[in-house]
Length: 162
Image 1 (cartoon, rainbow, N blue to C red):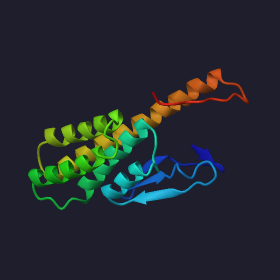
Image 2 (image 1 turned 45 degrees about the vertical axis):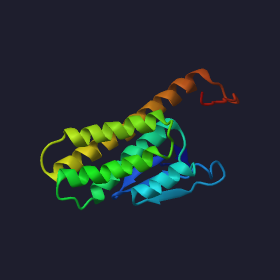
Image 3 (image 1 turned 30 degrees about the vertical axis):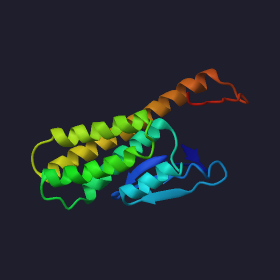
Image 4 (image 1 turned 90 degrees about the horizontal axis):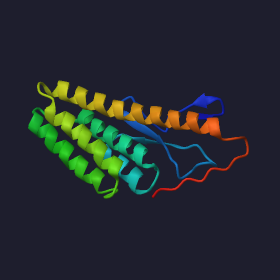
């Protein structure tokens, strides 16, 4: 996404927090929201600061990475309990959100299947969340590139969810 000559991601992990563009303010203003815990992400999904199924899935994955990153858990069981609580809160934001549930399940599966020290599990969770975010970005770039090849200047495009 390019505004005024700079590129900024809709969602990004920055210094152990998540930043997102407040989509409620577009196109008139470019406002960023910084989420330092998963409950702020829950609120951003509920109040529609973040929109679009893939973006909601990606930010839910990052929210679980945030939980893991900030966890004081000493055992895998303690970490999993924290993640399960956060996952439940995130799922409640959009009970029909296919991408949301998919991304949460993908992170939880990674957490459950990773053995070893807490640090290794947290690293695996973050890697999985970052992969989901990057895949979403690449898919959007491909959509834009393909769309650009068939649209002309002045064309109007209307999209809607089914």
